[in-house]
Length: 313
Image (cartoon, rainbow, N blue to C red; front, side, top):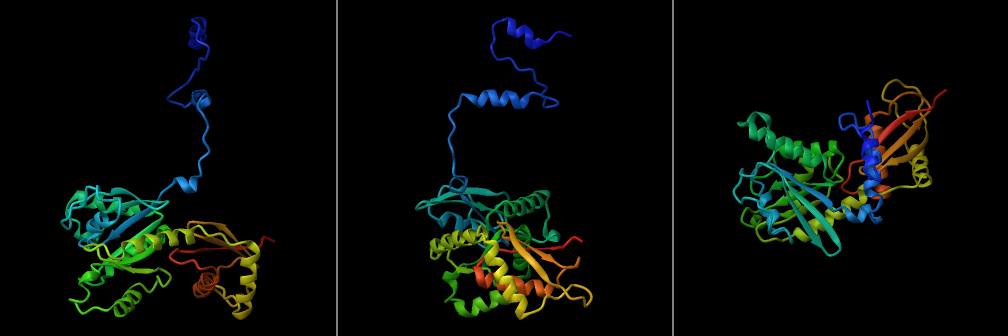
């Protein structure tokens, strides 16, 4: 079979590429040639990407109103009535030299409460929005109080490895409902026992109070998510904390030593621990290590990951 490329070459075309769209053959060469004449611009990826904030919570938490009240987000087409948002809505925001992308999601409910197929799709979209976010703003309702579902939603954000800010909305009604910030903060900590490291912000979507501070806190949490600790600093910390409390294995009474540790990733910060035996650490000891790491390096608002490895013999 004659080469079609050769026929086009005879017609005077200088650049002829033979490709297979089905198998992908030759596509790379074609793209390289197409981009060769374009000017190259080096982008700072960190500066170019906006901070993605996912607004998540139960229905009726007034997330749509929050979206409209945030500066620069007035054009977001979000309905004001509860339970009417069934898809995610993106709204870009600029505050000074910082850019945000606020992703409003539908209220997340229990599976048994989903009556229509579109409701199931809405919940799936909300979960995906959290997974692709940098920071999840978990909104709770000051008027209706805290519910078990609030903790479930926050737990999904922890599993996704995103930063978390607990947002108490409708705080403009606090006086009418005889609420104090100190007492409500205690209730929040009681309901979210697994999130002692997540900051809490009290806001009013109705008046806009506290929303600027919320953006500032979200930016601080993102910085913590991307913090790197030097190997020397981390191992000096490990030496101190293991000397204070001997590592405990998950099973058995065999003596365990943490030989070495290093940070192997960010967003969320992830640390690898090398042990002298092929065992895991007890969950309580992992929690002890996590608390000491947070105290030393101020990882506010971000989950941490501890991965255990063992020395190969």
